[in-house]
Length: 90
Image (cartoon, rainbow, N blue to C red; front, side):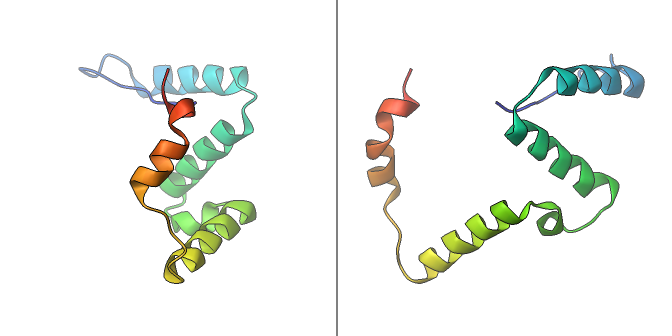
């Protein structure tokens, strides 16, 4: 699940958007969604480096993936898609 809010023709002001965000955040218990929102907002509010806002578990996962890639421990996209096809189709 990922949260996207579209504003068309400036029909919603900042107050309305913030109110909607508060409501949606209060209604979710999905930790990944909440972490993603937190990272996004921190990156815009503080203008810090995106990397510095990531939880340590995500940093370790990314670093592990980069290390595997540099060692050539990768699989072709087609192979991965075929393996997980049953979960990707509805």
